[in-house]
Image (cartoon, rainbow, N blue to C red):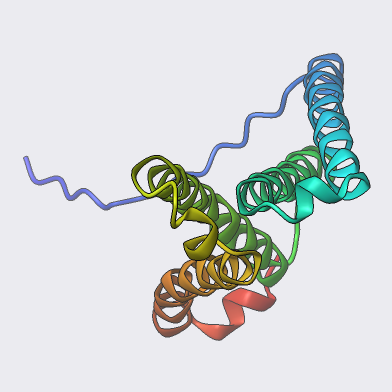
Length: 171
């Protein structure tokens, strides 16, 4: 008996019922807005008092909060779009995913820098003020963003090299 088999990929799309989709979106949106509201309160408090924005420890912390707030907002936006707009231009989707990837890679680097700042404060308490300045902290935040953007570039270049360009115009 001769049979030939072919590799066939079948894409099945399972849609939630309307009530289930509304419930999921409502829960996710309420939790996301609640978390962003708390983070906005932290940012407001940071900007209101001079003691916070003159201390490198708090600058790194508020950078972490702001980064997580932006990541939460973009992820929430993509979640809602996945339920409301079934077809989106691939280039727009790839842009959202690339930005979210960069922001998610920022978080561990920021935490590592915060740990290093605490290490300096504990091990070199007399030199901490000279080593950890506001200017150096801002340069460190710039280095964090540069590093994460450079780490995401190979993914972008591989996608551009391997995927046909008409894919990015497709829904």
